[in-house]
Length: 111
Length: 111
Image (cartoon, rainbow over all chains, first blue to last red; front, side):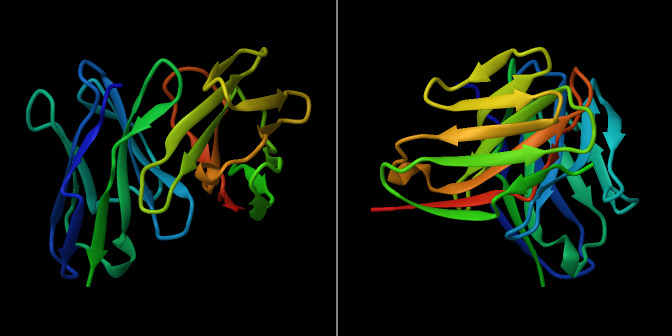
């Protein structure tokens, strides 16, 4: 089964620091999504990325967030100046023929 | 626009059945169901489309009432491995559109 790979699995950062989360979606997929999940809560949409451009974003995805494709296969989610409330699991997901395949996630802890 | 799931939590003994509901106030094109184990990524179970098409795992059954904009996930003869949080995700249009997830239903199956 195709996989979505995320790194790191866990990152601890100090408030105000920049973090970069990485994702390798299912190969040859033009579409992928970033979601986040605050501990014990629902999965929330952040941004969708299609063919090297942001196609849609939520109100959570403010100026502190950015998405890039630094090379042909990797995608990054950058948080410029982390806040305590950014602590969450961050998932990227690739849409398949049916449903999404989620990556294993990055647990971000802001202290 | 967030779908409403019920119940919030349910405890079953092995072999018992459960129904998890997901309802929306908006007209839906599709309903997705995912199961998430603690500390893991959501895993796709099933998608139900407007018009009656369904795709998913053979052992999972679900329904989608287009008139009521309600979907139900049926878990029969539950096993310990069914434990986890079940999320429905909804989309109002077809194509690669981000899902809006409900708050989840926590299912615990005990021996």
